[in-house]
Image 1 (tube, rainbow, N blue to C red):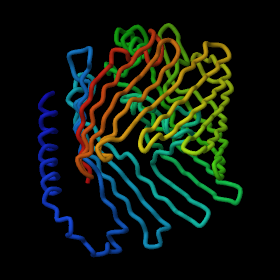
Image 2 (image 1 turned 120 degrees about the horizontal axis):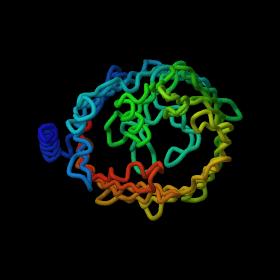
Image 3 (image 1 turned 90 degrees about the horizontal axis):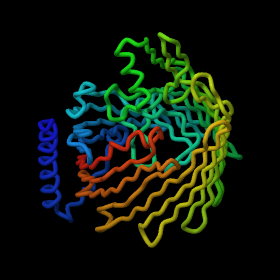
Image 4 (image 1 turned 45 degrees about the vertical axis):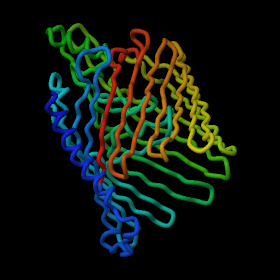
Length: 413
């Protein structure tokens, strides 16, 4: 376990020393006046190496000792009408050996874009955020949550790219956008024994292993899709959207004495969102309605959602973002709470530090305190502490034993 961490930090230490030494010896008057060639402008190769090391606070073990490399390639045609992008990664995480292979790698995104005068077409595997980009959203359903490693930060979850066809049509009244996912979203559930495995799934798997019943976990590769209209104005933007697809997590749909079936359920969400700019502040709001929202075992209920948010930059770099949300169910208890973020830059913008998180009813919370320090354009050191809480059976309460501290080092090229 420690060997993977030591190797990763050894590689990074060498890269840091090389990067800092090169920075120290640069001649500030040695300007490169040569222009980029046409070929250099068309091809861009970048990526990073990262050592991410997370240790449980209340347990004597590591959550993750991930050593990861990622490569990104971008190509732009001479006419700049066509663009292609792909990214792939490989990683080794010795802390996961008890429940999955420590080796993992895949192509993340791979798509092509045609930029027309008023029509843009995108085909391939990609991430497409809908709704509020910073915080909670009611319509961000184009990409599924990766429940194997669900924590992006304390307010937003990690999402997987989807195979999608996307078209955007710009008109005098606004932008029309449609997305179609021919094989649906790329869902991933936590592995058995993973710290991110929710209790009901762990109980089902444990009972299956005793021979109590047959457990079928399904992921039907069926189409999903949506449509939205956006209008941008001076100080006021708004959009309306609809998305029809399956739930991110499989729900209990059939249970007999000897057979249990888990499968995602289909539902449709309609969303209306708006943003108003006022001096250095922005007010945001979303409302959404989902008829027949699935609860499992064929049970459904109507779901109404409201989000109200505000953000502002004070002084030069002090950023504050607050959101309040309400999920109003017809037949079960409502969910309500808020998200927040307070960040600031220090040391000539080399360091960003702050706190961000989410709180909700049933005593739920996920709070992250973090600091990022950029040694130079290539090397970034990150430290953070992440804590969870909530009543037994609540969404965030599932992870209250997963509090962790993290130190990561990234070299970008």
